[in-house]
Image 1 (cartoon, rainbow, N blue to C red):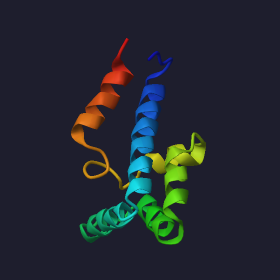
Image 2: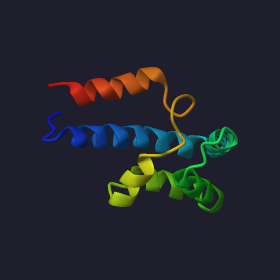
Image 3: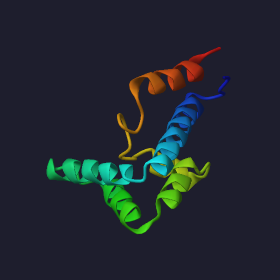
Length: 108
Protein backbone atom coordinates (compact mmCIF):
# COMPACT_ATOMS: atom_id res chain seq x y z
CA UNK A 1 0.00 0.00 0.00
CA UNK A 2 1.09 3.54 -0.61
CA UNK A 3 0.00 6.30 1.72
CA UNK A 4 0.68 10.00 1.26
CA UNK A 5 0.57 10.82 4.96
CA UNK A 6 1.10 8.66 8.07
CA UNK A 7 -2.42 9.38 9.32
CA UNK A 8 -3.81 7.79 6.12
CA UNK A 9 -2.11 4.53 7.07
CA UNK A 10 -3.54 4.70 10.59
CA UNK A 11 -7.01 5.41 9.20
CA UNK A 12 -6.70 2.48 6.80
CA UNK A 13 -5.59 0.15 9.63
CA UNK A 14 -8.54 1.26 11.76
CA UNK A 15 -10.96 0.79 8.85
CA UNK A 16 -9.66 -2.69 7.97
CA UNK A 17 -9.82 -3.70 11.62
CA UNK A 18 -13.35 -2.30 11.89
CA UNK A 19 -14.44 -4.27 8.83
CA UNK A 20 -13.21 -7.44 10.50
CA UNK A 21 -15.05 -6.54 13.71
CA UNK A 22 -18.21 -5.74 11.75
CA UNK A 23 -18.13 -9.20 10.14
CA UNK A 24 -17.66 -10.79 13.57
CA UNK A 25 -20.58 -8.86 15.04
CA UNK A 26 -22.85 -9.88 12.17
CA UNK A 27 -21.79 -13.53 12.55
CA UNK A 28 -22.18 -13.48 16.33
CA UNK A 29 -24.48 -10.68 17.58
CA UNK A 30 -23.82 -11.71 21.20
CA UNK A 31 -20.41 -10.05 20.84
CA UNK A 32 -22.13 -6.68 21.22
CA UNK A 33 -22.69 -7.62 24.88
CA UNK A 34 -18.96 -8.27 25.25
CA UNK A 35 -18.35 -4.76 23.95
CA UNK A 36 -20.77 -3.42 26.54
CA UNK A 37 -18.99 -5.44 29.22
CA UNK A 38 -15.70 -3.81 28.23
CA UNK A 39 -17.23 -0.36 28.52
CA UNK A 40 -18.72 -1.14 31.92
CA UNK A 41 -15.40 -2.54 33.12
CA UNK A 42 -13.50 0.54 31.92
CA UNK A 43 -16.02 2.86 33.56
CA UNK A 44 -15.78 0.91 36.83
CA UNK A 45 -12.02 1.57 36.73
CA UNK A 46 -12.59 5.31 36.36
CA UNK A 47 -12.20 5.53 32.59
CA UNK A 48 -15.51 7.21 31.84
CA UNK A 49 -14.94 8.85 28.47
CA UNK A 50 -17.68 10.53 26.46
CA UNK A 51 -16.85 8.14 23.60
CA UNK A 52 -17.65 5.17 25.84
CA UNK A 53 -20.98 6.74 26.77
CA UNK A 54 -21.71 7.25 23.08
CA UNK A 55 -20.81 3.65 22.26
CA UNK A 56 -22.90 2.38 25.15
CA UNK A 57 -25.90 4.31 23.84
CA UNK A 58 -25.32 2.98 20.30
CA UNK A 59 -25.02 -0.60 21.50
CA UNK A 60 -28.21 -0.33 23.52
CA UNK A 61 -30.32 1.37 20.85
CA UNK A 62 -29.04 0.14 17.47
CA UNK A 63 -29.26 -3.21 15.75
CA UNK A 64 -26.14 -5.27 15.23
CA UNK A 65 -26.24 -4.46 11.52
CA UNK A 66 -26.48 -0.72 12.25
CA UNK A 67 -23.49 -0.96 14.61
CA UNK A 68 -21.50 -2.90 12.02
CA UNK A 69 -22.42 -0.37 9.33
CA UNK A 70 -21.24 2.49 11.55
CA UNK A 71 -17.92 0.71 12.11
CA UNK A 72 -17.42 0.24 8.37
CA UNK A 73 -18.54 3.71 7.31
CA UNK A 74 -15.84 5.53 5.39
CA UNK A 75 -17.10 8.84 6.77
CA UNK A 76 -15.98 11.33 9.41
CA UNK A 77 -18.47 9.83 11.87
CA UNK A 78 -17.22 6.32 11.15
CA UNK A 79 -13.61 7.45 11.57
CA UNK A 80 -14.45 9.19 14.85
CA UNK A 81 -16.26 6.14 16.23
CA UNK A 82 -13.46 3.78 15.15
CA UNK A 83 -10.97 5.84 17.14
CA UNK A 84 -12.62 4.82 20.41
CA UNK A 85 -14.39 1.54 19.78
CA UNK A 86 -14.59 -1.02 22.57
CA UNK A 87 -14.13 -3.92 20.16
CA UNK A 88 -10.38 -4.42 20.44
CA UNK A 89 -8.50 -7.67 20.90
CA UNK A 90 -10.03 -11.13 21.19
CA UNK A 91 -12.75 -12.16 20.55
CA UNK A 92 -13.18 -9.28 18.12
CA UNK A 93 -9.74 -9.31 16.48
CA UNK A 94 -7.22 -12.07 16.96
CA UNK A 95 -3.53 -11.23 17.21
CA UNK A 96 -2.66 -12.96 13.92
CA UNK A 97 -5.38 -10.98 12.16
CA UNK A 98 -4.13 -7.72 13.64
CA UNK A 99 -0.58 -8.52 12.54
CA UNK A 100 -1.75 -9.39 9.02
CA UNK A 101 -3.50 -6.00 8.72
CA UNK A 102 -0.34 -4.24 9.93
CA UNK A 103 1.83 -6.18 7.49
CA UNK A 104 -0.42 -5.14 4.59
CA UNK A 105 -0.37 -1.53 5.79
CA UNK A 106 3.42 -1.38 5.89
CA UNK A 107 4.11 -3.45 2.76
CA UNK A 108 5.89 -1.42 0.11
